[in-house]
Image 1 (spheres, rainbow, N blue to C red):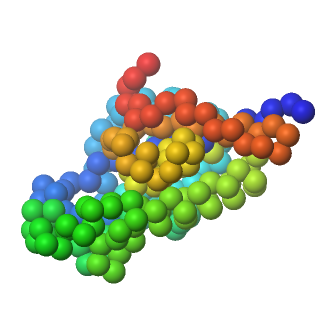
Image 2: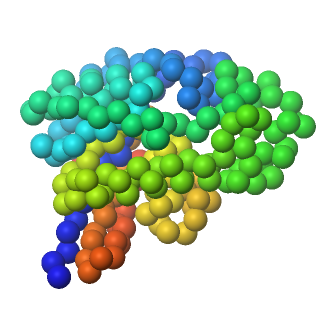
Length: 205
């Protein structure tokens, strides 16, 4: 059977202005869209006729819309809540420096499976991202899928591709406006994942 390759082009949203370094998680904070050269360079790397997906958070939507301005084809952006950033619950709007250490200690004892108060764990993210990726793989088999999302959801996709568990995803740095390319290769009802690049800057060759 001939192999069918579906290409996922993951982009982290543009940077946010956050001098207090707060945990913004699923808070709706706007992106800094001022680096026109970076958006133009990133658009050149993306395929034409791709399916575009982003989350409902403003910083992801704004990033996708700005990249689309430099794309040669008209883009219809699909929204998926399930690709949002990790929800930090009661800690959202605070910084690590202001959260008491006695509150942080249980979380850091197992940052994969533990969750902030009233928030979600990284394990939770990997489950919802994997479900969404598998759905996209079924509905857009053999195509190109551009996903503008968040560091947490991209790390979850990397963990899925490595097939070594959620902890592997936490080892990767994912910078704003970076490109991570992951391919799904299907043959004989089996899927093999291939990581082409991680955290590639817009102006990298």
